[in-house]
Length: 421
Image (cartoon, rainbow, N blue to C red; front, side, top):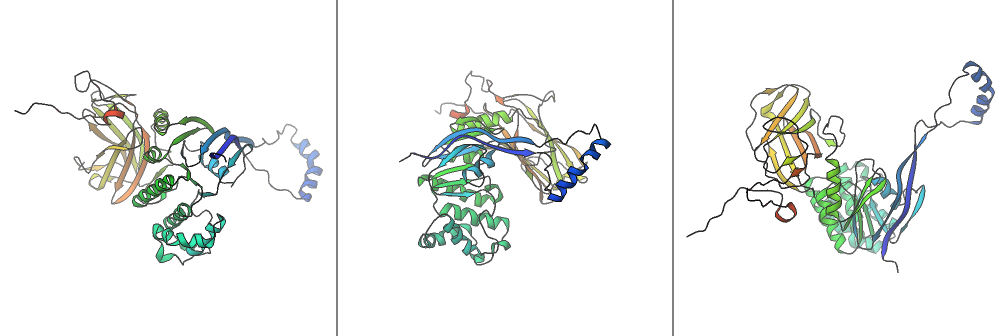
């Protein structure tokens, strides 16, 4: 009896990029052969079309997942995360290497994967159970729990082609989690649901893990990775860049992100109406106004947020939140126009907002920020995991004793002690 659920050795997946050669009939081939001398005479120096180039989405990926283990997979867009899950799900075959999968696999890779649009929610539950090899009695035993979790009871006998993407996701996750596959593969889909549903999904994943089932999930939700995963893999350019404890891998991932450009103008990973977009972020020393490459605990900081809007902005109808997250991805604090003084004037359609933070009370760590904007009661932009310069320790308290985030938390707070008489 093997003690692993998944073992991958030297996995590689190759695609071809460039112009795709169109399909030619026999008549096309004969005509092309007959006209070749004429083409060469007319264009003697004509260079042949550049052949399609290979692109390795995955290259030499090897890892092993024990039975009952929870593995988190991190990586930027294009790192190969979704391609890896598709290979593990047997949706696509590797170009090289092999993977051994021991156990029944349930996967949730795209909204509605495995659902037939013409069938009702009820029929799709039984269909998915049958695909997983479950008996009808087993599916019936889980049916009520699936419907209750998904909260689509009112529409359970409606064809799923009429479902919203949110309803699709609820039912798809409920089916994948409740039909008890030995191995559960989940791509970054929880971001589609609302906050309440995401919390319930994470809770269910934790329950599934405690039941001894193997879970592999891709996520940009750092708290979920650190809370649920036993181990973690960081993919970079299709290769395993790092493997180890979740805290260490998440920290390395966020630290690497901190070196990226802070321009957000062309960033596609965002949501909102787009009527007002954050185009860049700068973190500066408040005294000099000069952008910094690191911050000291207790330093006066100026955060500059550049924006572009469709028209002039009445600041009274604009709300901006800046949420700091530590190296585990957990929220530390939020700076908001809703909490502090409101800007009471009309702003130009393109400009910048400044948030001044005296004596930044953060312990040494690599932080990221999320920026959320609402304009005229509509969410206009929401960007997550924006890298900011790392925070370095300083003698904040003037005692020579410096707090360590892992031991003392992310915040440093002014305080004093005295003996009561």
